[in-house]
Amino acid sequence: MPPGSAQPSPQLQQAVAHAQQGRPDQALALIRRYLTKKPADPDANNLGALLCAQLSNIDQGLFFAQRAEAGAPGRADVLVTHAKLLQLSGRGDRAAEKLERAIELDPDQPDAHMTLGACLQHTDRLDDALRAMRRAVELRPDHTESRVNLGLLHLDRGEADLAVDTLREAARLEPSSVLVWDTLALVFSARA
Image 1 (cartoon, rainbow, N blue to C red):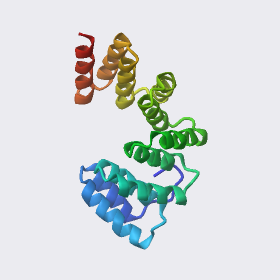
Image 2: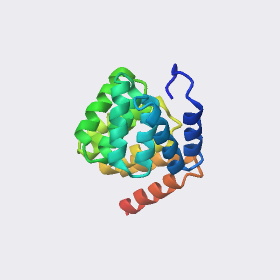
Image 3: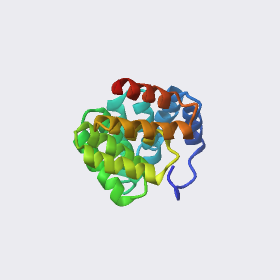
């Protein structure tokens, strides 16, 4: 829930707890039940969209994301969620538009910059992607996923040494991350 939001209902809190404990199916069931009573609740719809993305139910996730945005059109976090679902559905151009709007609303949201960077990378706008991903790392230097994405972007740009440096920094920040070590191995194999 974004800062300044009202306290979420116990049912939403329970759904969040299920999601955090690795039970997205149970969390989504609670969200669906809750939304039968309050179908326009943007927080519940946003959480439903995120859970559907996690469960690879993209069409249902887009439905929830659209309802969340209709209920809270000026919230950057809702736009970022909608953009993630659009990107997963292969509509990166529309996702980038939502992310640019989210950044206008909240220029200091690292998730928006990271996701925009990924969208731009997939459309071969690598210089723009680099700016977005560097901004994400600048805003949240301890976020491992942003550094991994930046490292992969460096690899796409033919900058293998920068990719290694970026991933080594990610490994320093989170030495137990399988994602970091797997990505670093990928970069080393690409350099060979």
